[in-house]
Image 1: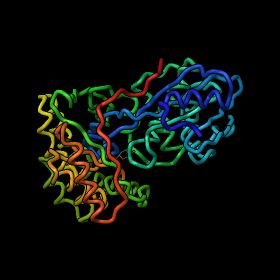
Image 2 (image 1 turned 90 degrees about the horizontal axis):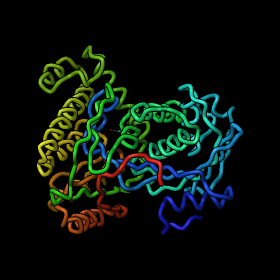
Image 3 (image 1 turned 30 degrees about the horizontal axis):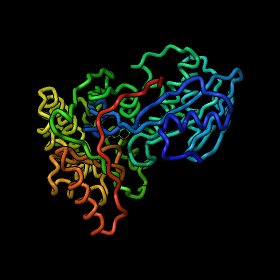
Image 4 (image 1 turned 60 degrees about the vertical axis):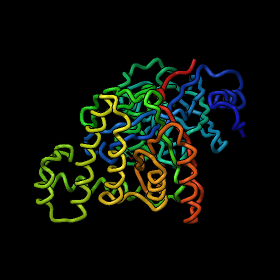
Length: 389
Ligand code: GAF
């Protein structure tokens, strides 16, 4: 096993040397992400505003002549090998290796000649916490293979390749937000992404200057059939758009919401549509406030987003709601679940000197309800995927 006290890039490099001998040709890093606001809007062709985390996945790798990929991961301390046959068709490699094989498959599908490679993977992005550990893995592998093969793929086209790996090879029907965040985010900024045309604007998100911090609270809630529920929400949104005669819910503005809701027979679809339409507007409002450097004022929008996810989209769980309520009661300016839902993390916008107080309040609320203790960390908007020196 690797030494968890060592930096993630050193663990990846040491893992490479131990498994394969010699030095890796390079190391490539890709971060996890949190979404500041804009949940379940990406596959509705709407708006999202994620930022990259300082927690990263690192791949140390070199090129091989044979069309074969050998991959070691510190997480399972396991080495797998797959060849051209395994990437001829989606789904042949399963488990964590599917995210790696999926990237090779998607690059080949896009017409690239992907070099064989040996890869060693280490990661600080926790699995199953809704911080996009899978997009971080896909994007770090993608960056490594592009460089090793001298392949040309502009940054704005890379998220689609990584997303295809996940949608088609792995089989998870996710939107474009996570891979876009992991690849296109910049330090000190949140990424305002229009998920219809994939245009982006880097929005300054200077927490230090405002005397603020973002506290990420890992709810440690047990996995609750998130995959099936995610797909069900997606189907509801598509049904809503189709009933309203629009290509996607992005095409319904908040000023048209009442009229749109009156056209829908089904109460559940009405709630799902209301979440998406109001959430798109909250992203636009948040962006406007950040452009005006009014960081503190975004708090109520974050909290309103949470209420919408809890009551209309129905994707929160008791641990998550408890963390949000306790953070707000302890003085957070705003708090919301971030990510796909049914567990995962909460983010709270707090005064920079209140992290200990808010953490203690969330821990106390958890203890009172008998929940497994949460994890907490303050984070700053960090760089996207990159080759390390
Ligand atoms: C998950 C998905 F991967 C994203 O595409 C997005 O839909 C998110 O849930 C919800 O906003 O992270």
